[in-house]
Length: 269
Image (tube, rainbow, N blue to C red; front, side, top):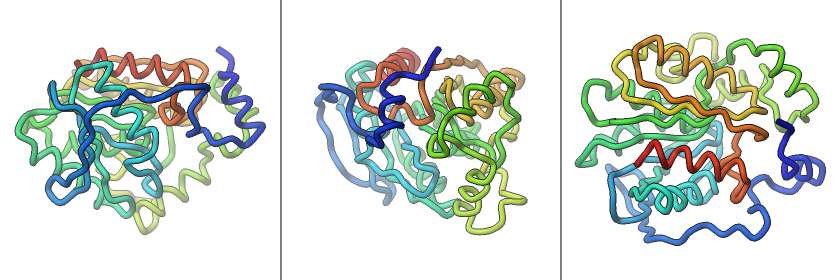
């Protein structure tokens, strides 16, 4: 599928990808800001089981106000009938953010669905590995996850799709290395296993939804995670959103984002 025209226009004009598309407005719901285990959180909705949600941002950016956090949470309350806890985890350096996520999930009184986008997908997987065997996490959602210092080799069709895109829409090896060194606070040559959990042993993890974006250098990480989870005996659902860039859930009202939200909602109910 061709790249969504919204992206084509915004890449040309410089309009922020986080701006809503057209007259889109996020659903309203009860929203409460608080802390859990000393970690800032924002709770959305009051009924249903709990989905703990982690925004992206490469461990150097992102917060509870960004669409990938706030809009996604509101949409999942409306679409899935769940209560969403969005976590304002500490950014770099490792392991502060992971410690925050583990603390929040451990403090809740029932098992949760745990999910996130990009760097948040990394933290969701690492937290589930940390808590494996505790029954604290009943399901995982990994949306275009950032799981490797160097993403697995791309097939030729992905290479061809990505080649025309500008640097701002790419995750080049140089950019990946710089992100890793910022996150780790040191050389990325030998990262701790939970910092980049894409090569961990996945046996014993709960059922998992892995979402990829068609125009994303990190798609190889999502596909690799799906293969490795399945090989480890984990029940896996994989979904590829066509026509979108990495971070599509951060563009409110984008048709591909709304389709992906439906997929997450069905999985999380």
